[in-house]
Image 1 (cartoon, rainbow, N blue to C red):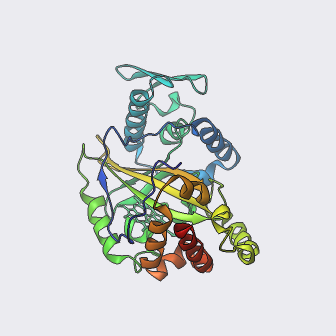
Image 2: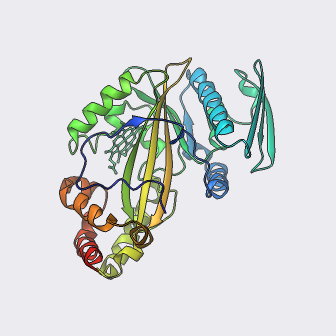
Image 3: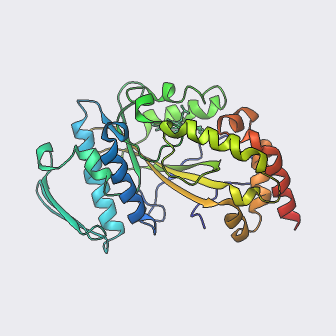
Length: 309
Ligand code: HEM
């Protein structure tokens, strides 16, 4: 079952951020940890410049991310990780991967990759850094992007990153920009984003968009109301936003979770009804953007049948 199912009695047009607490950690080490980290590493080895990019001048922010992520991961999962700090000399042990690394904070050549690239290979989350005027995307490791990639967005300010979506949910995006500019130190937040997909592949970065579009065109005729929930996956992104200590940049972390829709509905009373209500009240342009409109009709009919059966 998914750890989050963000469907209430109607579509919510608010940014929906909440304070990050110990119950909802920055870094989530779940049962998929090993498979997801190994997949990230495979992607990064195959196409390093596609999945990781950074602009110069943000080294302090990168080290901020190393410190935050390692300390959080070791605190959350002491059976999986050990972190020893002696001044700037740090020793990291990843027991799940049976590897260790000793490095000097602030000295890039003591790590095998750039700091953000290295630390991103220790956790399942995608990690992105935004900074400065307009809150620009200045560095990121993005392996499980949903329909976007670093080539498309690196260097852009927050508002331009969201160009396709701003006119559809304008008040939400205006509030999000204010939040990005003002998020205080020591008060990290999180929010959820959702989509429905025909595939459960984690890497849905832009290079896969043509193949995913072809898959939709092929499968569309078979998406009948009685089987559609077996063919769709709920894809949830848990997004965190944290002001970084020394650099003042913002870390945007994304943990992607997914489950087949029929399995999710079977375990959650009222879920079919809520999902149907959200789909019925969401702006049609948003459903177009999310790629849901082509199968909306059989899905809604299927969900309504589900709730009466
Ligand atoms: C409170 C903060 C944020 C809010 C409310 C927000 C909201 C949204 C929404 C509503 C979408 C449309 C996707 C969907 O609903 O399925 C979206 C897409 C997207 N968001 Fe955000 N977002 C936030 C933070 C960020 C940050 C910090 C980044 C930094 C990289 C980011 C990057 C993107 C990208 C790349 C897309 C896809 C845009 C495209 O299709 O070209 N978002 N966001």
